[in-house]
Image (cartoon, rainbow, N blue to C red):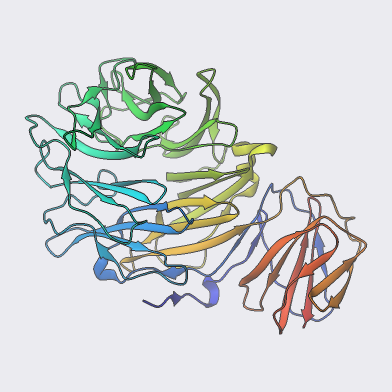
Length: 489
């Protein structure tokens, strides 16, 4: 399937927290200060799958080579659950996850996915079969093919609702479920290799305050350093806030930590989840929505898993008075990236990145940029993943009945040496590209005249390696300055 490239006003280029106009006059030079920690240079957005394959229930993981594998679905009698996979050049045609019918396809409570290397798990529920209808399907080849559905609770007599998958450190699957009613418990079901079935649930939420968990807020289970963890929205007498629970050395769920200081009091289920990732130093980073301050806003929290303590928590954009929801987060190496939706007279997607060694999520407010400005209609429910310096973003386009994908490259960080502000640099052609006189140790980008990022890198010696012929915009970036040159090769 070929890419549907979006052109015109939808095509934007970002450097730092500021939208940057690519210069088109020969010899014209721009120099300005930038305060963002990192920048993301975005390629054009593409529509991934035709509308008959649906756009709801949008999830994404990266397989072992860092390629996106996207889960999406369509509800109703003509609907289904599909996987669309990047093949290195383009997206393959969508593949049905299962031939079963009557799937419960839902943005907030529907199917989920998890990954470990090239082993991917997708869980779903058959609509109306809230006790026995949970299923898991496994792919052993990075999402290219899918196995036979495995029931998660075939003998259940009470609700085992909304299975969410995870993998332990031996690549064995396990799931969490909303278990029973009055109270609804957080059930954890582990895989038994001998019988090749899931065991009966145990109460993973037992160490949290109160008796019940939020009945329709999906959990975020994961395994780390030999322990199993679960980030859960608790329900302690209608105080709905997020906790992280974990197993001890014996495998018992014995420890709980409140990571959400907002303490949202609401007597109905918010139907929203947290997303989490582990930073390079082992810190847990979580993002979530809360309306404790009188409106739907997005937050982050960090926790020290060794000391078992909350480190910090704040809004992603403090002081912004807009409806926000559905944050997504990921990290790799020194970079963390967050995406969320914001209603500014229509829903748009915002993305921010930051260097974990230079402020982490505290740097996000200065780096936030709208990546869907110029699109008509709403853009909603983003999912962001990062591998090295490459950012993968998907989001819903309800008016089109499909979803978009954008790939970005993380640019300069605040650790780069500064350029002298307003000091023009000299650039000369070389057989391998260009040479920048009078400065070394900078980050560079090359854009074509349509704004597409063609290449980027770090130069320790003033040389920029770029072999394509044509007319291009060379950007030289440091902590204090960005300069652009229109150059011909």
